[in-house]
Figure 1 (tube, one colour):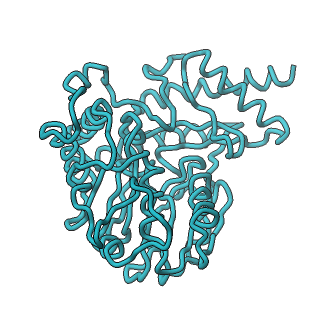
Figure 2 (cartoon, helix red, strand yellow):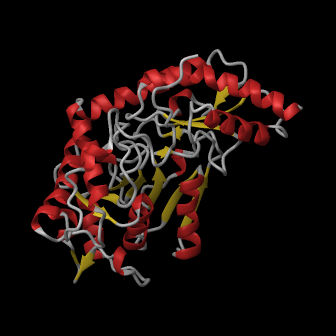
Length: 377
C-alpha cells in the first residue's frame, strides 16, 4: 500500500500548507519590537489578509488577541455578556467548556444550557434570539458542524457569538447572521500556535461601548477604554507581545490561501477530503462517522467511531490503532479526542492533500485488523 506523502492528520496544530519548510520563516522580524513600524505592518497584514480571504463584511473589526481561540472566546464572553440572558449550545467538548465558564466562572443568573449528545446537534429551534447565544460552528472534537445559518434570526436582539476555529477558512460562514466570530492560527491554515483572532460586527461594538461588565476584567480582556473601543487592537497593536515567527507563519498560510484562489478553493479542498472519507466509510465494515446526519459532517475534523465492535473493547482497540498508525508512519496524531466516544479523528482541512487522505484509508483498515487481533490475544 502506498503511504501518504505527508502523514500529518493532527486536529491542532494542524498540517502545514503543501510545500512548507522553515525557509518560509526566513524573513521573520525576530529580535524586533512588535510596536516598531515594520513589525506592526506585518501584524496589520495578518488582519487585512484574513479579512480579504474570509470576505469579512464592511464595518467589521478584526483583531489579534492573546491565548489562541480560547483567549478570543473568553475575551468575548467576559467583555460582552451580562445585559441579556444567555443561551449556550453545548454539544461537544469546547462548547461544554464555554457553558461551564458562563455558569461557574461568570455565574450568569439568566443562563440556559441547551445540550446535545456527541454525534448530534442540539435543538437549534430552542434558542431565544431575544437573548445572546454562544455556539461553536464546527465541533472539532465530535466532527459535527452546523449545516447553515438559517436558524439564526436575522432580526435578533441578542448577539450571535460563534467559536469558528475549525470552520474559518474551510466553511462558508454567514456573516450577516453572526456578531462575534473567533478562530486561531493553528487550525485550517496550519499556523503555529500563540494568538487568536476576534472579529466583531457593528452590533458587537455597540454592545462593548454601551455595557460595563459587572465583574473585574483582566488587562488582556479589555477591549474598551473610557467607554470607547480600543481601535488599536484592530490595527495591529496587540495586547501582549506576539511571536514574530508565528506572525510570519500566519502570513505564509494566508498568502498561500489567497494564491490558490481564496476561500472557494479552501472550501473545495476540504470538501474533497471529506468526500474521499465518505466514499470509503460507505463500504467500511467497521467504521462509521460519529456525525449521524450526513448534512452535519465536518469537512475538517473528521471523526470516526466503531460500527459493531463490543463497547467494552472499543477504548483499547482505538488506542492500539492510533499507536499502530504512528509506528507505521502513515497517520500521526489520529486518535479521537479524550472526551469523545472511542475512535479516530483525521484532520481533513485545506492544507491536507486529497491524495494523502485517499492513501491513508486502506491503512486504517489494516490498523483495525491488527488492533483487534492484538486486543483479542
